[in-house]
Image 1: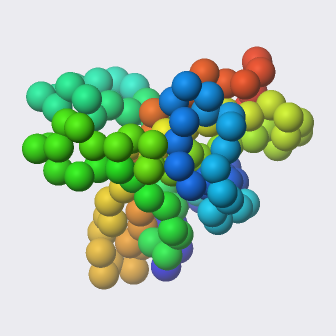
Image 2: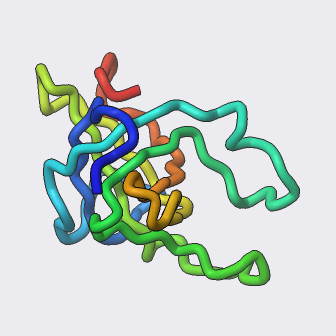
Amino acid sequence: MALPMPANVRVDIYRTANPADPYHLGPAGPQGVPGYLKPRVATGRQGSASWLRWTHVLYLNPNVDIRDAYNSQLDPARDDTIADTVIVADPADRSKRTAFYVVFVELALRGSGVDHLRVYLDRFQPESWPTGAL
């Protein structure tokens, strides 16, 4: 299925997340994946699940293998390092990149012809400024 909006980024996905050093990347997952990245800080800081926060939403085709560490709201001791890291590089200078932690992945609009993954991301500090990925 196609995304319900035109892609505005290409992302590289890496297995595992390292909050202490987000640019020390684990094994590569899918690379060069087209998606639509949208900042959503205002909505990502609401709600009663204080540990479930995001800064951006990434829309991807439903067949993309991307993983989160979410294991119900009853699991505050979950292992956050098993979630993927998403990298968005500046298309003009790939040395300028921004890492994002995959907070939560959901399938949206299942069976509608525009079903897609809605991936909630939390931005790590960019590796160098400015980037085209903020």
